[in-house]
Structures are given as structure tokens and as C-alpha cells.
Length: 268
Image 1 (cartoon, rainbow, N blue to C red):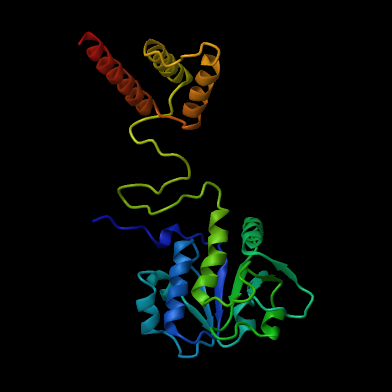
Image 2: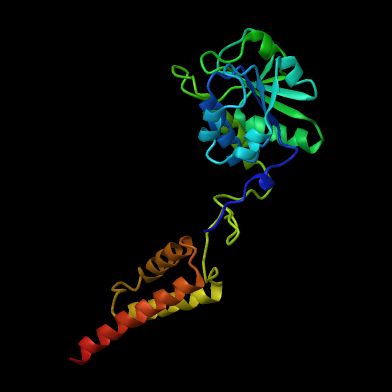
């Protein structure tokens, strides 16, 4: 059975996730799972209500145990961010303070740039019921706010972590998608052509001419004046499909088969 790779895929320069006064172990565990999905591995807890460690967190993490094994617990937020150089606070509520507000997308770009310069980053996430307080937000450099329904803006901790972590990960150069195992690498975005390759122009033109010759023989082009327009439409239609070499061979086989049926009927 193939086994998905885990902790070695996390970037050591990635931001630290800081959960302030989390109330439920399950939420800590699901936040860790979201972190693992998108390459974050360092988790800090500030005053977890039910203490630490948490059996519920381990169950909810669904295998992201290396993150929970490395959890750091702090008594105050000031201690949790003391070694960091740039901190982001996540909140959906207006704060009445002079502070830059950015989206998760912009945060992803900014975090990548800062990590590339060697800065130590942290992302603050507040309590399940009411988030971060103003004093806590004031300790951050920037506010991250997601474009959500303004009439229903509240999201849980794991969702918030996932939103920001996704934007961090997607800005990685050449990011891969999906699962990677010992037997098969992860996918990369784009059209996949197993056991084939994109058709060359020569192969496409050969198919076009084959099809057009058989359409001529079948009397498809009833109006000579319209033939050029119909031919262009057919060629444009197939060009948009970005056919593979194997698909071109299949289509030429279809054309030959239909031509053979027509010839047999003509002989009868």
C-alpha cells in the first residue's frame, strides 16, 4: 500500500501558525491538518483553554502528528511572537485602528517575498467564539481579511488556517497538486497525456487533409463557394481541442472506418 509523504515536504522557512486561546482540542487538530495540507509545520498555542497535550487534537489531526508533536505552548502572545519579525493577524471585524488590511492572496505573495529575505513570519488566529481582541491585533503588523459574505463572515479556525495556508503554498514556484506517494510523483497543473504527446502540426495537417478528402468523396461540400469556410471551421474546431498524437491516430482510424463503410455500401 502506498504511503503519502508528510513532514519532509514542509518548508522550514514557512510562517508559524499561532492559535490564541483555542478552546477545543478538535479545532487544534483540524488546524494542524489544514497546515499539513499546505506545507506549514510549526504550530504555537497561547493559553489553550483545556491545556496541552490533547487527545482530541490528535484524533482530529488525521495523521498530521508531526505538527502536534512539535507544538510550542506560551502563556502570553508577546512571548509567542518574540522571535518573529513580521506578524499577520486574521480577523473579519473592523478594528478602528490604523493598520494595513490585505486579502489572503496578497498575504501569500507578501509572505513568500519576506521568507525569501530571511524574515521570520507568524500568523495569528483567534478564539473560536470571538477571535482576537484589539490588543492582540495591535501586536501584528498587518491584518488579513478574506473576501467572505459580509452578512456571515465568521469562519472556524481550521477554515481560516486553510485559507491563508493555501495562499502561502500556491505561490510556491512550480507548485505541485494532488497527492505524492513513493510510487508516483504529485501532479503539476496542465493537460496530462499518458502514453502520448501533443500532436505535431504535420500530424494535424495530415488528419485535416485526410478528412477533407473523404468529405469531398462523400459529397459533403455541396457548395464549392462554401468549402473554404467549412474547412476553416473544421480545422479551427480541431485546433482548439489540442489533440494528442494518439488522438489524431484514433480520429484517422475513424475516418478510414467510415470511408470503408461507405465504399462497401457503394459496392452493394
